[in-house]
Length: 136
Image (cartoon, rainbow, N blue to C red; front, top):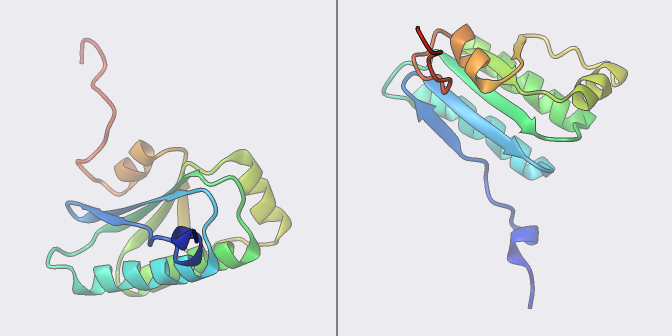
């Protein structure tokens, strides 16, 4: 029996939270899937009925970023910027940050946040997942 998921990996979902697009990356991202993600995000921004204020890309489930994925992330941010939308990378692991620096990828146009909640706050979104503190 052939594993069709290995031959045709599932696309990465792009979720809309009001005027924010949220993308959560998990595990290895195959080159074709990364290119499709770039296409999907750009088209969602351009064709959304609600103007898109920002894109949050959650990298907390990614352990390794190669130069191709780094370039795709930079291109997503550049395309989004040209479409008047900000991009925030959230949840980057220290090993991923070190790898990006070692590869010489500065990722222009990308803002980073430690987690999705902080990324949403940077974009001014009302959709955060933190609970109010006691007494607040």
